[in-house]
Image 1 (cartoon, rainbow, N blue to C red):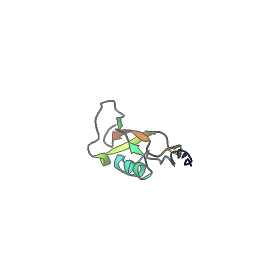
Image 2: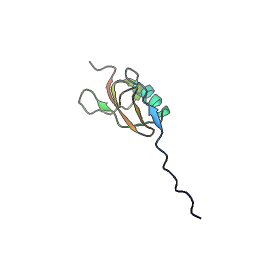
Image 3: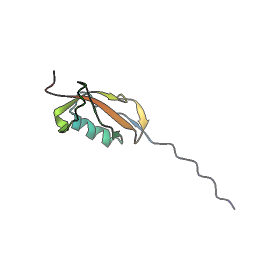
Image 4: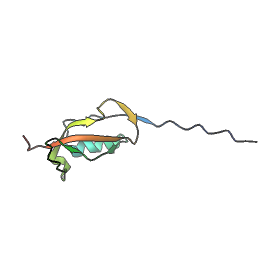
Length: 86
């Protein structure tokens, strides 16, 4: 007797939380709690700086945008700037 073939389980979908306007550390915490992976941020000034103290940076935009549905484990990328930037 053959065992029935297992049907692959579709990935779990999550709603992307809104991190725009939050400090980068808080946004990362929210995204990770939702089941997303955080990719390295983009520096909005174009200077290619890396956030060292994430709470000193503010999220200007995110991709994918808030409210959309993505597979759990998907990557999210933020565009950030320092609070002290003009």
